[in-house]
Length: 176
Length: 169
Image 1 (cartoon, chains in turn blue, yellow):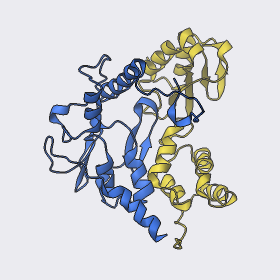
Image 2 (cartoon, rainbow over the protein chains, first blue to last red):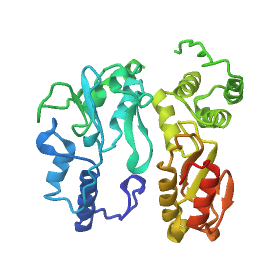
Image 3 (tube, rainbow over the protein chains, first blue to last red):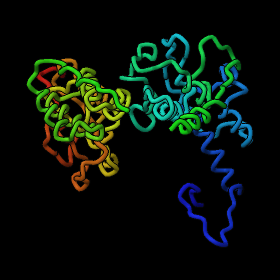
Image 4 (cartoon, rainbow over the protein chains, first blue to last red):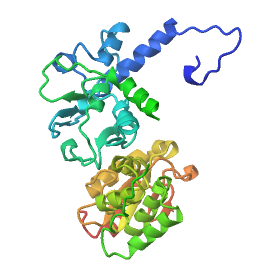
């Protein structure tokens, strides 16, 4: 097994991306994501529009073979328009990247390391008290799960819109 | 296109900020000097408070959250003032097998703190290390920068009792 991102293409190469072994590992990784925090689809704002949920369905995951960790993590609803629920965060760091690379504010970052890592705003302060946040909402819309959502959304009501994002960067490049 | 932003004001009249400024000047006020500058702050003040993090990140034009992330990622940095004494218990593989875990449990019980915390009377900070490179001496404890090897629970107990000023029964 070779990682695709660092394997060069060679003549006569035969590539298989969907063997039984790979499926097993993929399943395992997604199951580990589920066991790490408290992912409860039935009460989630992103139920039905969640990338993690979709992935689990595609991989036929019906149960988690690992013990759940049930960590005690907080929900921060201090921002006037958005909510961050760390229970549903999978630490993909898309919010960190979009905030830094596209919005340019770099309000988000990852704090700590290993199992204790989490995303924070500014100096680990409530999101609502952040001076750098521009409330643009890009982080909310790139978030694959219900970890970042708009305030006031109920179960399964959070639809992510991120079609505009590639255009933002393309238009900026056009302008030079 | 770059706007001129004045250097932020020094948080206090403390002379130690001159050391911090000197480090940043030596590195040409570049954002890549973040870790080295935080090292200077840590060594001069013993910990990084939010004023220090704000001052350094504004001076070097580093996002606040990034500075905070760096400060929490590396074990060298501490966000709270440490105690008069430090007790580092190694939890590397060798030390862990030879009883580092028990030593930590003992210290946690005696001092009534978790790793990374300082006792209420500001006497002892309890820390853990991944490996201090003295695996032959396992289990090891670094008490006030002094390495002790093959540490038994009783000797750690005595050491802690001696320095944490009769707090312990």
